[in-house]
Image (cartoon, rainbow, N blue to C red; front, side, top):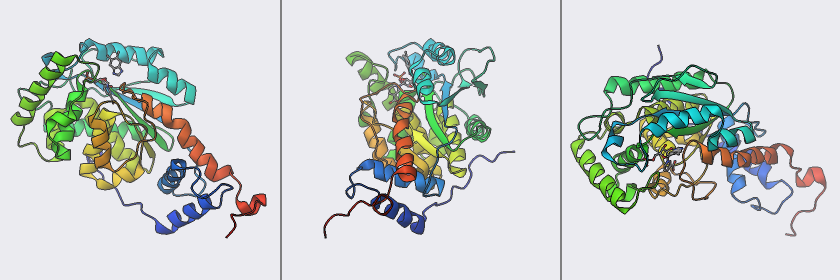
Length: 346
Ligand SMILES: O=C(O)c1ccc[n+]([C@@H]2O[C@H](COP(=O)([O-])O)[C@@H](O)[C@H]2O)c1
Ligand SMILES: Cc1cc2nc[nH]c2cc1C
């Protein structure tokens, strides 16, 4: 049986980091001229434990689930959009479907608890906990047992996937509320700065979301431990992603973090096992205002700032070519010595 929380080791390796630094500095370019791509190359080399990293069989994992809280009008869209978008992912028409195809990312969609049954088909993995979470405004979104099961599910799904890179994606109407609540509780921030328009609330909708989330936070004042907060605020797709992050970290895969909601899953995983973040690359900074605050708490610098607020893993897919370029720079760029290029005058 899979344990819920694995121990994630510290992968700090000073001699390897020094070799990577010197390999990057000896490439045919002025010192530091490849900017943040150099830090990215260093990070990927450190995660994969080599000066010649090759990203293999990258996996885009989109976890989907419904939220009881969505019935309280905290989203601009109806809950049915969760299952409709799962169909769209599988039919190949969603943004993440298009971008995953473009970049050669294998797409797996996990039904973690969508309020609708799906016909089995390739690319869909069924790991349903229930037909959506309970309403977090009246009690915990999930039980401790459901939360633990969702984490184990995420671990098992990733364990069965090939490759050494995992891109995180999610879908769930109402899940920007879960992410805001998790950030507030685990990040020690007032709820107001953690809330944004999500799928596009108007001013009245945003005011309603603020009011609902203040009440939810107060109802679960005692849920301060990471797993208690996760169970209180949901959702199933976030808990499944927590398991996916823990498993990928244990296997030393490169973890590409998407927007606000995927990052909230990493925040929970970090609270459980701080070293998971060593394996993470932040793809982008979402337009959802809490995301920047969340990334600061993770200590991650986002690669892109395209004002995305879509989720699905779309930002991870867009950032993917940068990770591939960083690896190619390490593997294929000539050094001053090998190319016979003169160094800077002393
Ligand atoms: O990832 C983000 O930064 C992001 C920001 C805003 C919205 N989303 C997506 O929109 C949904 C959540 O928004 P909401 O308004 O329903 O809470 C969910 O399906 C997410 O994938 C995602
Ligand atoms: C259409 C739509 C697509 C999405 N993809 C991720 N979250 C979403 C929310 C909506 C509403």
